Amino acid sequence: NGGFTFSTPLLNGSPYSVTVFAQPPGQNCTVTNGSGSLAGANVTNVVVSCTQTASYTIGGTLSGLQGGKSVVLQNNLGDNLTLNSDGGFTFSTPLLNGSPYSVTVLTQPSGETCTVTNGTGSLAGANVTSVNVTCIGYTVGGTLVGLNSDESVVLQNNLGDNLSLTSNGVFTFSATLANGSPYS
Image (cartoon, rainbow, N blue to C red; front, side):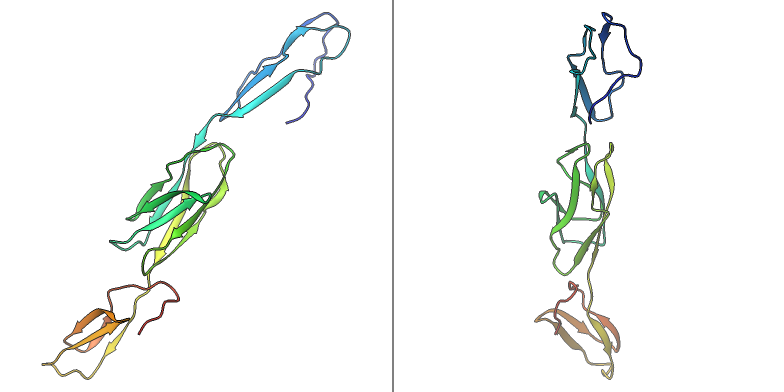
């Protein structure tokens, strides 16, 4: 943006016609006051105005989401997107070329913590497909020792998630917990 001057001067009285030779990607440029004849002075009132025309999408890949759970993502504090399974995703609202984007997690899935990498930037003439959302759930478990072979025990975590054990060894509750969650 700013002033411009063609390098080849013209003689007084010469006609001139300024046109857009090549449009920039994702924009449409028009010329105002682009033609006339020189009348004893430099022409300084030619205006070239460019507007955004191309729009692009924001997307990426979700991984680690456990079955039956969902995560809600946002782009630029809106355009909410609910995801129910791992794989590729794309926000529904395209953005104009050059626009900023910022993907965040609006609602975490129960028992998991999802983080976003490559979630911010500005569109540069192409769809963004490099946003990565990774979900991690933590498990609670341990080791059972001293149980007689003809007995069983039922363990419970956080007043739910019952786990019936019939033999000694390593165990893990099925429900995952988000980072920082209490367990009992």
